[in-house]
Image (cartoon, rainbow, N blue to C red; front, side):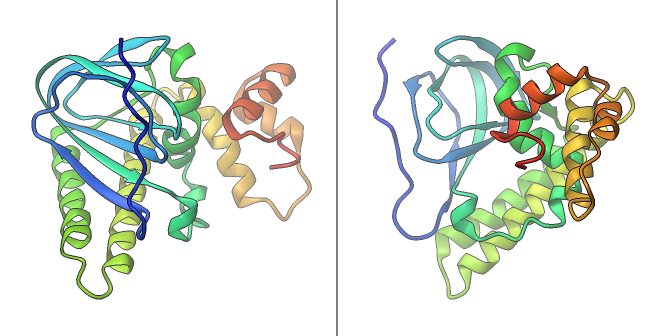
Length: 229
């Protein structure tokens, strides 16, 4: 399938809302930014160079910068693409890093999507989707109107959205404690106890992993060893 040219965010503010009402088929393409996708209506197939999976209303997932992807077999699918450079936004993340759902949604799930077959994606209830869509509208209004102070306000709304989605992720998986959320709990534990000596046996217990699997998964998800992190 033909690959499209990689897109980049316009110069200036590193946050943009892209509404696709509806989203039709799109060839493989890449982005020079991270992308938060919220499926608001309908269904379709999201695919990469290596895999494909069905997506439905309420699905939320992250596409990493530089990862090629596309859509096909869409049926009245409406999606919101939130394009962002997290580091360039200078968004304070100290508190949100204590939420396991944040690490699961923004860090871990995008890295293990292939091997997990998209089983651990965030799926919002209709009520949660309506609330998230309202925050998206707030972000869009600020970035579109660009009145004085819009950068601050849009960033604040994005923080609201990130916090809300992270809580939804934790709530969805807290009952069965999926392996992904257990690993997210490990990173959250480190964030809350980073001033203390690193207790590897404690982290292994939280993750329910073998030592070798834990270190391998941690490196893959964060890019660091637990000690370096």
